[in-house]
Structures are given as structure tokens and as C-alpha cells.
Image 1 (cartoon, helix red, strand yellow):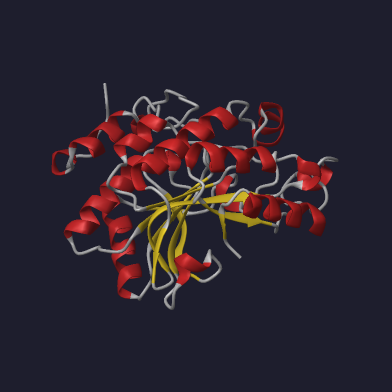
Image 2 (cartoon, rainbow, N blue to C red):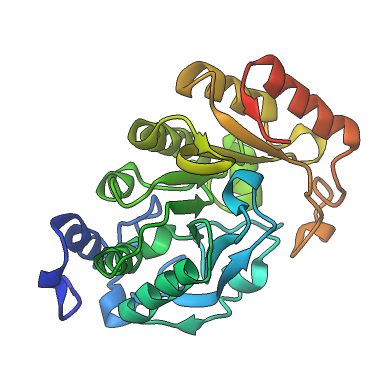
Length: 295
């Protein structure tokens, strides 16, 4: 038995299928198979309606997303990854936020547009694909016209991504690891590398390379890669994958701001920041491979 919103008939077939995949939940690769419509909770720790931590213009995102009005970020509580170094652990792991209805979420999106934001930036949306797609469909009928950014940890199901085709203009996934052992140790996701690569392929299939007009991103793939100490992320292997299996024109943000957060300070492998040399060697390698490296 599936649990759909009372007004499910109002929504398109892809949205109804996303709700069906929430009960039992198989939205993400963990496939917890809990009935979130009954109040059951899986790995992400969230029921069938979103907890929103904050919503507003954000000026600290990548330059092509910001513009003069900022990126209209909506931070969702909960996460399908268990990163022990999470910099937003109060949101992702402690799940601080207020529950919102689909209508309230749609209104948030419209208010961000009215305030002059450059896009709607959905932060950690994977486990909430059904209510998010519902809110997007509702908001678009009421005039939402901004590009939609899917800002994800990259642990995404291809099946769910296919149902989101047409809802998302800009995919912005993390590519965290190239080795299963590291992914298991640091994020409790040993299958992350293969899941992540399949997801990025699907994202690129949908939206292609990043397209920027007058300094603002309109559509396409923008990959984030956080450099970890001692090469733990497998940065060069990820860059090779992007250049050789996605597109030599892939846009990547090589991020050097890692610091030991949450439980990382007690973990000997990641209890320090990466060195300048570690960060710059990664950035230089991406440039050497021909990728579009954001500065």
C-alpha cells in the first residue's frame, strides 16, 4: 500500500511515482523500504514531509550561481550519508529544522524569486525528492521561472534522477571518493564510488555541460570536489573519470576549505586541513586534464 498526498491527482505521473517510491522508501541507494507515510524513519531520519533549516539568499556559493541577488538556498534537514566530517552536521545529522507542507515549500520558492535571487538552490534534496518535486510543480504553475539547482552529496539513485528529469536545470553533485574503503569509513557508504559515478552520468545526460550567460549558470552539470588530507578522496581518479567518461568540458569546483568538523578531530586520518600543496596539485591536475576549473 502506498501513501500519496490527498491531492496527488493534481501532480504529474513522475511526481506520483516519486511518492510511490517513498512508501516503502527506495528513493536513494540505501533502499530502507520504510513507510515514511506511516511515520517510519530510515537512514535519513526524516518522514515524508521536509524539515527546512533555512531559506534565503546565499552569497557564498559558486560565482556562476550567485549574481547580484544571491543563490536562493533552501537547506533541508537530514541526509542519506553519514559523513563524520560534515560541516553542516547540525542540519544533516542533528536534523534541526521546521516541518513544511508542499504549499509552504512552494511559497518559499516564490518568495526567493520575488526577492531577486538568481536560482532556487535545493541543498541536500535526495531524501525529499517527492515533496520537492511536488512543490516545484506547484510553484511553476504560480509563476516560478528561476533555474533549479539540485545541490546533492552525490549519493543518488539513477531511477530517482530519471523521474526528476525536467524539474532540474543545474545538477551540482559532490564527488567525494574514488575508493570504497574510504567511503565506508568516512560516510558509511561503501558503494558510494560506483553509485556516484552512475548518478553523475545520468545528470550529465539530462543537462549536459554547464551553460553560463552573462556570468550566471542557466543549465548543466557543476561538480564539487572537496580535497581531503593525504589524498583520501582519490582526487586524481575522480578528475580522470570526469575528463574521460563525462566530458572534457566538465565544470568542477576543486574545494580547499576542508577542516575537521563534527567527529573528524578525533579521526587520525582527517584531523587536519589539507596542505596548500595538496589543494593546488589537485587544481593543477584538473586544469591539465582540460576541465573547466572554477577559481
